[in-house]
Length: 331
Image (cartoon, rainbow, N blue to C red; front, side, top):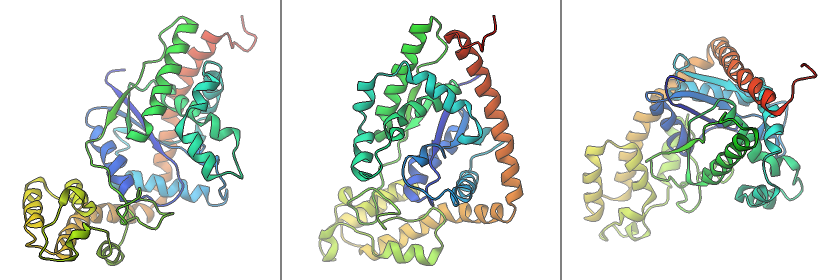
């Protein structure tokens, strides 16, 4: 490969929110300048919990539109759908033979998902990390954008890659390195839990201005500021944290100063944040509207991305099969 390569993806489980954008998508867009990007819509990961197969195609389309509207450029990066590349699941099976049962049993996500879906603790929940490793290694990614909650999965991928290389006597797979975002962790509007549509504490990535302000107006802030005369503590205020991710760097010191001096009320601070949010999300919303008016173009981009991804995947699988002796009976 002529340059470093990244692989990342999201599940098509519903509308994306501000946390998804700031924590992942915005970082992917920036990384396109430095890396060759493979950005996947991981629909096969989304079926380990109960879902409606009738709405999956529309959710995949919505996710593709979100990727493109956020700034993923299909002329520089590959945008594709996991299920369109059957090599993902084939490689996952091969990799499962060099993945230890104990490793999977220690995965935090399996424990969390099992608690959340006690009526459907299926094998897919347990082997999910192997498919994730296959997603990464299939394209021989050198780097993976990750959040703190994904570090364990990437470490497993590195272990599996090393074990495969050692067992079959060839350094086929790079040991992918993490790429961390410097965006601060954005909590939900309640200030207590991770932003989530299911918890009702989110701002949608494509939120229209009026409902956006209605949500923001009720957002949790520093409880000390319920009395205007009391100085604020921006270090514990989730609204201020959103400012640090969205507002121009030269304005942040002034916002912090006015908060600490209690010269602004929380309403004024939220109005300033609304302007920053609209400056960021407004153009994305307009691009998404244009893409939805021309879904044929989106389908063409996905078809091209699927084909490009599959060519890469087939090349990798040919080498994997040869190393493992899976020759289909040929000499």
